[in-house]
Image (cartoon, rainbow, N blue to C red; front, side, top):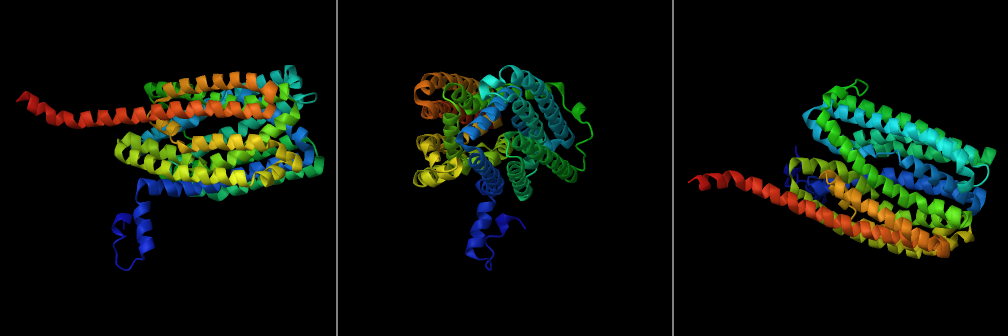
Length: 471
């Protein structure tokens, strides 16, 4: 029996009837998916914070700052080769899963091949840069660490496509179930590396092993779920089902998402690299700890953001614009309240958070960075849906321009503020660029909705207007 027909049964409790009605709506479905993604994201957040705490307690702020510079350097260079194929595979996969699962499999395979090939190009380049620029960026003895961490980029290639498939097949509960075990395993490996060897080299090996294990498990689970859902093995080549025009459209979107995603990488990692070069490892550690604590505000809305793209892609493809607009409005009200509560919690508990992340009282030096970073995350959370809507509506071109401009503004702000204000200046630069992105992308998203609504109305009026004109 459908949820719509259940609520009015006399014997059902009122709360259960209300929940049945709510779960039958798109907002209710999004809330359920968000809950499961929240469990999954909580595992990632908890493991990430535990990793920072372990490193700062073992190696101090300076040692953690050095590790952060190595990671940022690899992510900055590796991100140049990461086309963020997940957005294109989600958008195009959602269109084909119902109509032709074989073509959907071709979408996933095409995206995976591109992601793996571009990542493979990044590893040798990172090895060369580690030999030439590594000691200048991360200090003496960092060459081997950078090269080793470069290989840690391979594991996430397997995981990225797996999550796309599982999310499109509404297996959010499954992801939430086993991701806790994978993240716990990562923390245990890092803990053992510190206890047994007490070196950054051992820590990076532990991260590399954890990522590879997670990637193999994720791709295995996704392949089995897809086969059960469509009686089609993902290992069987289906690229021939994907027409050349569709491949070109995917490549165009991937190019746009590359510009968007790399601007995000620049904004996330370049401050760390510049702080390491201009202000030293301690200021780098202060910035990374403050931003890590502030990220908790953004993580409150991250589950909804992750759950939103598959649902919006399906609704946009089906032309259900009125439902889409209503869902976004209500989700914005909820996210606004959540951001306010999360920001207030960060302000109240900032000292305990920073002492935990910073390895002791010295972590409190990141207080200003924490507050500025939390404000940045809260502003994003108020309109978290803008990028998702633009991806679903295939408006990635204007979005890429906005993100590139914001990255340039961010870089210029860093060059001006970091030499004088260190970690605090880097935090202010992040806030300025995020504010520019929020205003611009929200305007573009609202314009896209209005345009699509007008086109749908014109199409609906067309058949009725034609006979009148003929008469």
